[in-house]
Amino acid sequence: MKIGGFQKNTLIDFPGTIACIVFTKGCNFICPYCHNPDLVATPKKVATDLFDENKIFNFLEKRKGLLEGVVISGGEPTLQEDLIAFSRIIKDMGYRLKLDTNGTRPEILAKLFEQELVDFVSMDIKTCLEKYHLVVPGKFDAKKIYESICLLMDKAPAYEFRTTCVRPFINKKIMTDIGKMITGASTYNLQKCSRNVTVLDPKFLKADHNFFSDKQMLELKAIIDKYVTTSVVR
Image (cartoon, rainbow, N blue to C red; front, side, top):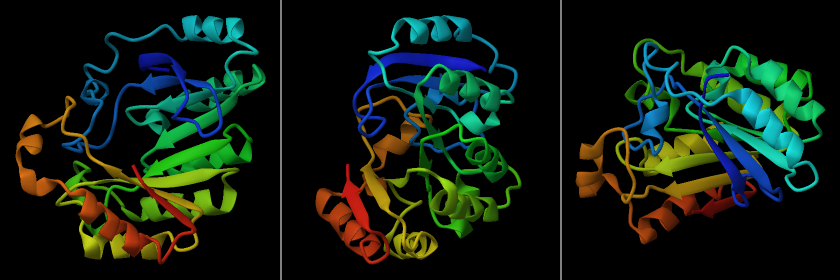
């Protein structure tokens, strides 16, 4: 796979699991608040500065019994042509696997579930379906997002939905629309956007109106609580 980053240890990214994180390079979104701008590469640049996946496999061999799982994040992992093969190697080594995804390729998620290659999926929901044009360049069928939502709720061994709450992608009405899409979901995380990081569009951080206060985040949580079993503000 095209791997742009590797973190050897994490205690917070895979619930209940000591894991490492593999960051794939390349994304089909252009979220201005993206915290991993180096991974949002153009096709011409995506092949540069890559990690050797064999070194990661060697690392995992040596850490058996110490590490429990692997998180594949990004970027957007489902864009990788060999995600299925890579995931199978990890599972054959005895590790649990968590996938972070934006939900744009439900057909890949379906294959992962069919082949029992993933144990946990975190799916970002950026906004309501009608607003996805704000984060996806070019033509995109937003119904794929809803298809992925349904797949997770029906097929995933464990899952969570999460949203980075910033304007103009989120407001009270949009949060209600998201709630209706994921009615009955087990877990939904509302993430407050950090302003102390490098992002894809630095100008975005300068507009105070884009960001919610702690009180406003709780108001958004109160809306989503009507639709899901558990919600958390992070």
